[in-house]
Structure formats: structure tokens, C-alpha cells
Image (cartoon, rainbow, N blue to C red; front, side, top):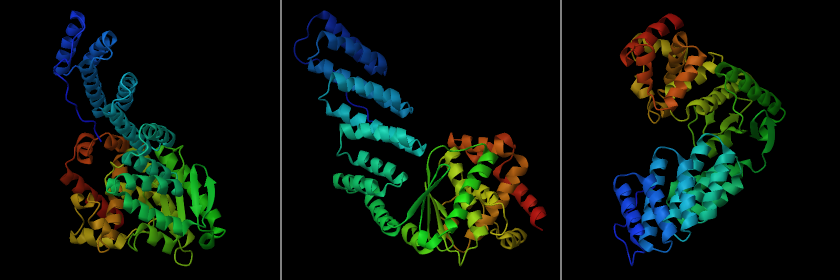
Amino acid sequence: MIIQHCIISLFICGAVQGADLQILNKQGLEFFKEGDYQSAVATFTDALKHSPSDPAITNNYIASCRSLAAGYARTGDLEAAIEVLREASGKVPENRDVRTDLVVVYINKGTRELHSKNISGAKMAIGEALKLDNRSAGANCLAGDIAYAMHDLDAAETYWKKARQADPGYCAVSNRITKLQNEKNTQRSYSRAGAYHFDIRFDYKTLGLGICDLREFLMEAYEKVGQDFDRFPQYPIVVILSSEDDFRMVNKVPDFVAGLYDGKIRVPVNFSKVPMSTLKAIIFHEYTHALIYDIAGHACPIWLNEGIAMLQMRTTDLVAVNLLRKALLSGDVISLEKLDDRTGIWNNPAYVNLAYAQSWIMAQYLFTRWNYRQIKNVLVRLKNGASFTAIIGEDMNRTPAQFEQEWKTFALHRIQ
């Protein structure tokens, strides 16, 4: 959400107290029209000292503060926006527009902190928003998101219901509540364990003593994948180890999905169907997604994300190598454009195995050109707004077509 510019009052209501006040007001209006909102705020602040009850001066001051804060918010300096609006709220506490803007900025800050996995910062920001307006749909929705990220399902449900009551259409909150209620029903009897920075919730009836092995796999993934990328998250990572039925019912995913990272690591466990070695590979795969998110946020192309995660499984047993070989020989590989589409082939059972295998070999090719430090740098640049096409152009001097031809040549030699 972005704070909207407000309309400044270009007149002075009532009697003006002296020539100095008129001069200050005129100067403030000139600064405002020039877009120098910082100077406008300073000038109208001086004017308020002369006449704190003048409605026109007050309106001009508020308009300048809101415009200054909006500018800070647009550039991402939310702390500066909060400081401006808090000061304005202190001077004119009855102004609802300032309070509304401040709630919005706190929500934006809380959202940013949540995406950065700074849970304490997110909770602090949303706490301030709720103090200002505890009926805000946006604030309650985000408070629910924060509670859900911590796997406090009861608190998340309470906040999301408040958000729905305030605005039934806000943030598709009804869908969140439905999923959460399914999750609560299936996980009511789940146990809890910890390991490093993992908060593990598991179905003991399904796992039994197998939880000890899976817990070790998580710790091993934290160490080995972390060493590769020199990245060791210090925040809690929620892990849900459930029965396969519970996994499918809660997450509504196709049968070919063997694990999931959606802010939490979710792995279905069926010892009669999936051997322990495969579960270990899946846990390494999903933890890699968590680490890539920690570095790149949502900016990593899905094929690169999946390709790196496939490599980190440290086995080729789950890679459809024969299918990949056949596609390479026939020329039926998937285009880079289609591999970038999260809603197409990745949800199509007819193509998904090839998509994973192709992403795996493409990532292998990249690791012949770049080391882990350089790959990590690529992920950081993606998060900062660079495109993969731009990066290979700058770092490899390759067009997408040249990159595609080179990885195909590499793949044909590698898997024959």
C-alpha cells in the first residue's frame, strides 16, 4: 500500500495574526508547490508556533507532513515516514488522516520485516498499527500472517477473523481461514521438537522414532547447504512432518509433489512408500528452497530455484535422466520462457518431471561457470531487481539463445 498525496489548502481561513505569519504561510505554500515537502513541513511548524489553532496553517502542515511521508514511503525509507507521521500525530492528535497513514506505513514495515523473516520487528510494527486502529483489516490480516508464520494457529485464526469482519474481501482472508482450520484439525495432536533453528511439528503416529532420523537430516541440511552458500539463518524455520493424507488435504497439491516450501518446510512421510534415503533428499531439497528464499526472496526464477534444490539433494535417483536425454536428442526440451512460468508446466504432470530434470542440468551447467559464492551473488542481485537475462549478459557475455545452446551441449556430453 502507498500513502496517497493529499490536497493542500491554498488559502488562509480567518484572521491572520501578523505579517510574520502571513510570510511563513506563503513561504510554506511555495515550498509545497515546488515539491520541497521537508522545507514546507519546517516552515509550517514554525507557523504553528505562532498560531497553533489556526485551521489553515494546521491543514497546510498536515498536508505537507503526509506528502513528505509519502515520498519517504515510496523510496522505502519507512522509518523516516513513521517519524514524520508520529510527530504530526503528536501535534495534531485528532487528525484521522495522519493516523490512517501511520497505520498503513506500520503495515508496510511489518510486511517487509515478515518477508525478511525478522519476526520480532514485524510484531513490533504491527503492534503499533493495532494500537492506532485495532479494527483495521490490513493490520489484523498482517498480524494473522505473523502468527501463522510462527505456527501459532489459534492467534492467526483470531486475527484473520477480525480482518474478515472489518472487510470480508481483504487479502482473500477467507481462504486463509479455511486452510488454517483444516491445518488445525489435522495437527491437533501433533508433537513438537526443536533442532538448531528449526521448530518441528510432527505426527508421532506416522513418524514414531523415525522423527530422530528426520531431525538429523534437517540439522545436516542446515550445516551442509549452509556451508555451500555460507548462509546460516538465525530465525525459527517451521517444519511440518505429516502423514501423506494430511499433507494432501491441507495443501491441495498434486500427487507428484513430494514436499513443499511456502514459508514453512512441509514434507509428507510414508515409510512404507518412501525410503529414508529419499526423505533425506526431499528434506535437503526443501531446506534449499528456504535458504534461497532467505537470500533472494521471491525473485529467483523457478527453474533456477528448483535446479539448485535438485543439486542439493546430492543424488540423481530422483532425476528423470532418461526423460531428459530423450528430450535433448529429439529437440523437445522446454524453453526458458516456459520454465519461468510458475503456473504452467510446473503444474502439469506430463511435463513436470522433465522440468525438474532440465532445471537440474541447467543448474549444473551454471556451476561450471560460477562457484557457490558467485551463485549466491547472483541470487542477491536478483533480489535487488536484476534479471537473469541481464546477469548472464553482464557476467557471461551470453544472450538467452547462446545460454540455451551451451547448456544443451553441456547436457548431451554429461548424461550420455
